[in-house]
Image 1 (cartoon, rainbow, N blue to C red):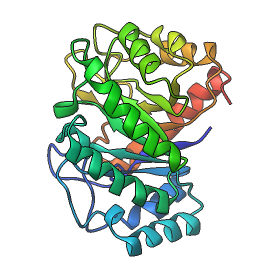
Image 2 (tube, helix red, strand yellow; image 1 turned 90 degrees about the vertical axis):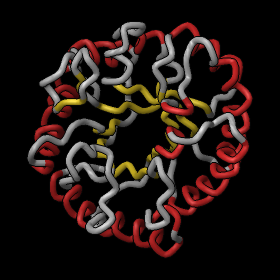
Image 3 (spheres, rainbow, N blue to C red; image 1 turned 30 degrees about the horizontal axis):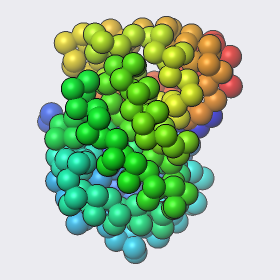
Image 4 (cartoon, rainbow, N blue to C red; image 1 turned 180 degrees about the horizontal axis):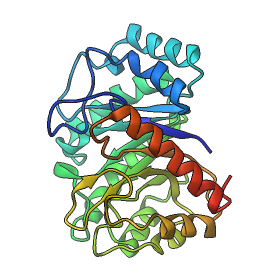
Length: 269
């Protein structure tokens, strides 16, 4: 059971830019992650294509790998935010994905996360439109031996129908504690119902009006979260994708203490 932090969350970012690639000092995060006690950094691509993001450079991918090795960090997950600004149902995104997964394979990524929001928003009205695109992307992913994880607020019933339609043991669910739980259509017991497809968890706290806040300042009941995780004997990994507060390093330290306490309390380790 490994614990990671989203890239950029150890460092300050411009005002109102929580998800921010730190192009000037991204190398600093590897040593910070190691010194605080994290197991991995979750890399990501940006909503607007950025050629300076290391994922697009073979030389920088090698540097990613070397920095991880030097600091004792694992390489596990990659989140493709580009899909939020580009429709998964369009052929141009599918062509983009082929290039992305080739880079992820070189980096040694085990799981690619697709957050199905924005232009790729998945909902109860359109979920049938996502079956074929997901089937195609999953097929590509499986050939590369990389799991494909989707993040969505789609209600439990239709989500199960979607997974049954794609019918692949390589397609899994990224469960986001903030995004899913603060959606009135979902509840904590969904964790128990969806246990077969949950393969990774983003830890996030939010207020009921959808504001992303530091852990403990929002309306997410983490005791209910971890109680349900205990019910399914969850033994996979966590990534913090939460507000980093005024002091990102202090927040990262507190987040790690928090999750270790919850893992111990509910005997998940």
